[in-house]
Length: 330
Ligand code: TXA
Ligand code: MG
Image 1 (cartoon, rainbow, N blue to C red):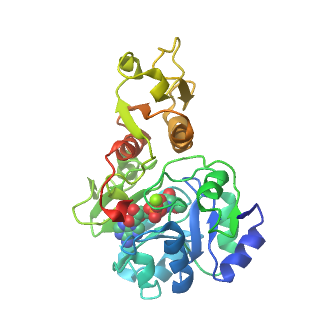
Image 2 (tube, rainbow, N blue to C red; image 1 turned 90 degrees about the horizontal axis):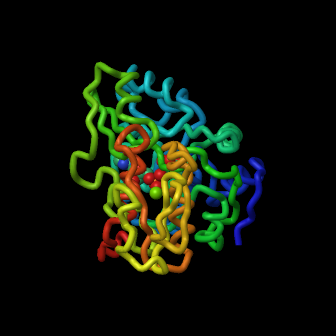
């Protein structure tokens, strides 16, 4: 079993020794190792059972460290504007890497994703150690990302010696990932930082949504955030009355509607009022809880396709996607 605590010194000791440590961030918990030590990074892939082509995000303590890890020409004034606006925070910027970032971190890609996380414990940790941290979300590959220390312990407790417990994650969905190349910004994964947020900072750049083909961001694999039960997502759960046996259903509501139609024996609420930030913060914990309750179907609702709602709908769509038979995604 993992040791769980809030000692930055203890986490730093494990990391210096080449071990993996689960770390809190404002988005989800990460499974961290010294990004400059290929053997330590290999332990992440091993614990997650993650395919080696899936690159890891490198977490640094401040924007001033970025030029150590990415090519000088790539760290443009626009990148600095984005970093000033959103770091520390839930934005990952993908740029051409320097050779000091080992191939195992980037799955052989010539680029690296950099991010300065906003959680105070992990910031203290990054200041204490003298290397950056490679960290994917701390879940077995293909499963829902963890937003509480106990989620990590439940699934990876036998594989992670130390979990740095920073409480529940406040954002709840993974960072927005962008690549910046010349005047083009490509949004590879939606998150809390929206298209509009980015456009406000770099209005003169060409900002594009969605991947441009290929396995640019394997987080884009269809069934990437899937629980074990079948997830059905509809515009309004009110429409579901009479469609499935309530004993077979767990309903996840975006807000606490009154009165509730009797569509499910278990009802979980993401927010009392339907506030999207709250919906995002509670979504993954609710999917996990629903997965463990008796029943066959998890019923959930789409949110307004705007701001962080785009990220919420993206994760719901992936949770609902049929599981691939491709062993790589299992
Ligand atoms: O919020 C987050 O981003 C969390 C916390 C722990 O920081 N991390 C996270 O990592 O979600 P992960 O590994 O679960 O998802 C990272 C995604 C992957 O889909 C990966 O393919 C993509 O980032 N990625 C990483 N480096 C990349 C690169 N060089 N080019 C394209 N995509 C990259
Ligand atoms: Mg992940």
